[in-house]
Amino acid sequence: MAPSVTRIGMIVPPAQGFVPPEPRQLYPDVEFLAKGLGLTEMTPEGYDSVIDRVGELAADLAGEGAEVVSLMGTSLSFYQGPDFNRDLISAMETAAGVPSTTMTQSVVDALDHLDASTLTVATAYGESVNTPLQEYLSASGFAIEALRFLDIKDVKDVFDVTDRDIIDLADRAVEAAPDAQALFISCGGLQTASITQPIEDRHRLPVVSSAMAGVWGVARLAGLSTRRDGFGRLFET
Image (cartoon, rainbow, N blue to C red; front, side):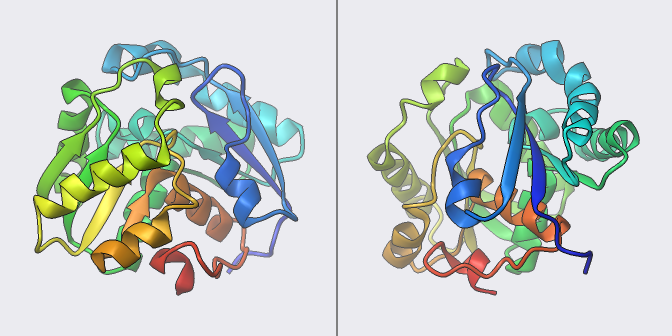
């Protein structure tokens, strides 16, 4: 494992460039830096309008002292498929000169870590983003038993989604696929730190969310311990 670092850079979709809440909840002693892409719409066209800035922002974060960098937007890194995600990681590492990853890569690694190959999926997206997500997961070896979604297009609307909204969405996804080995909640803007464990307890099923897997993946890349009690099965191993 790589030596532990204490300064982690994150490229986040909104223009404001705020550090998401989950990283600081899980790692209060780590310094997190963030840069915003300025994404306004969760559509392929919206992603196309900002994706070319990823390398530049990775370099900016490294210039401010980030020792590892992650693109903390799931759909930004899956919408053009696995090869594109790998190219994004390579471009970030080339531009920044530090180890890099994406939220999508962290999600795939987390699902593999939990030996979950049959999934039920809950997303914030509309159909134009759900379709490439399903294609990405299938190409990565996962079987999707069901998919339920909130049909949100405007990025700012994601932050109005409540815990109750996410729990209800998770209930619908799990009920539609009783034989799934895990629930995947996709969209880094859906805040899930406080509800991951309750959803797992409710359904007796591992939960991998973009928000939590994104932190898990970049922490692991940084050489930090991923053992955290009370945040679901992913953080218990």
